Amino acid sequence: MKSPKPRLRFATCSFAVMTLFLAFQPGRAAERTLPYLNPALPVAERARDLLGRMTLDEKIGQMAQADLLALQSPADVQTYGLGSVLSGGDSKPPVNSPQGWLKTVDGLQSRALKTRLKIPLLYGFDAVHGANDVIGAVIFPHNIGLGATHNPALVLQAEHVTAEEMAGAGIRWAFAPCVAVAQDERWGRTYESLGQSPDWVAEMATMAVKGFQGYTLSTNADSVLACAKHFLGDGGTQGGVDQGDTVCSETTLRKLYLPPYRAAVNAGVGSIMVSFSSWNGRKMSGNKYLLTDVLKGELGFKGFLVSDWAAIDQLSPDYKADVETAVNAGLDMIMIPYGPGHADNYVEFIQDLKRLVDERKVSLARIDDAVSRILRIKFRMGLFERPYANDPASMAAIGSPEHRQVARECVRASLVLLKNARQALPLSKKIKRLAVVGRGANDLAMQCGGWTISWQGSGQLTFGTTILQAIRQTVSPRTRITYSPDGADLGRPDAVVVVVGETPYAEFRGDRTNLDLAPQDVALVERARASGAPVVTILLSGRPLVL
Figure (cartoon, rainbow, N blue to C red):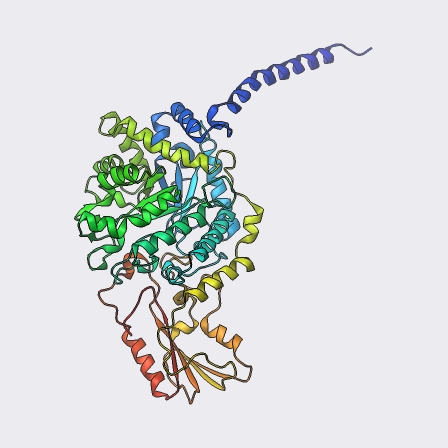
């Protein structure tokens, strides 16, 4: 006969497991039934419930956006309850591929979901012309080219492709579209503008927002949060100086620069980025009248406002005072590119804002308004139900032939023929001798411009076909092609294709004092003309240049 002791031990053990099981089940059930975790409830009710459960530290954490490379550790997402992380111009994951991005974003998201209330993280980057940070994604023409298509439906398609490719790589927030109304082509961001007509930019902005978000921001896998930028008047600074001062009356400000934002708000844009620039000497990051009274009040914007890259630091020499001014002006989330070890970092922001609330210099009501706006967007996006953006269909679509076909259509529609007086075009595919001149003919970086993999668009980091390669693939096998970067030794061609333009640039590095074609490019065209053959000049630039 077997001893009863093992049965007794087994029974005791089973009872202990049962006790533990029963003890933990009510907690899990209660967690599942928390109102903010119930997707059947209205977004406003869920946000209100979650806000009521949050501590001040948790609220302030949601208002902080840190750069990926500034994070002291991925654990800081959990430690400080960060609401967002971004990748700035040259801030990339260790492996720049769709899978590499997804792994990085999901890794940070797992940290966010370990916080007490499991509030998911929102990750974003600048989608200036496609998912342009991701190697392998489709690169579209810049906005200046999309504007030249005069085809709003094509812009809708382009931004929908961009949204799908971003989502495939795990990125759910696009810092786009730029709805600046450029008034001075010397500005280094002219190519980010859809045009100089406020009504035209407004029409295109509507379609761009719908391309990113869908006809409404939703839980769909290909719905990505759009961000209209940069509010307000960034395209009208004196002398075209980036981050400069737009000097004009309020009547002019409203007439020229406000219509695209009204259109974006009406289209349901979920976020808006505030400009570095000033209006009549006052920085936009501290302009409560325009941010709160006009944008949130008059226009009825219900999303959240995010600052630009360390933009609030320009308000004064005192960072704590900058935080006070910016948050009270209406900024809901602060973009902070610096980490511990650098002044004005995300830890300092969190500490300063908490002190400001304790000192009653920033009201709890202002904090609650900012956080509510952020939470409502996260609920609308379905981040609480689907925090990990791993969608196989979207991943597979990155760089697909179908997506590249849309980009091809955009390129074709964006091309502008300035002059063809002697009918030099079209060139015959059977031409016998063709000279191709200029470094731009065999330079993908010049073709794509800034914000292509890297911030300044330098290097041959993306996939594509250069103009020279395309010509070689198109003409007859019997055509003799001579390529000369400097225009020397052209021989006796039947025609010359000259490719000139600007070295890639982004933002203030592209500011210019004149719009003249570079002297070396002028010399290149003159050498081509001296050959006596018909000359076809292709200009690769982010703005009109004097030819």
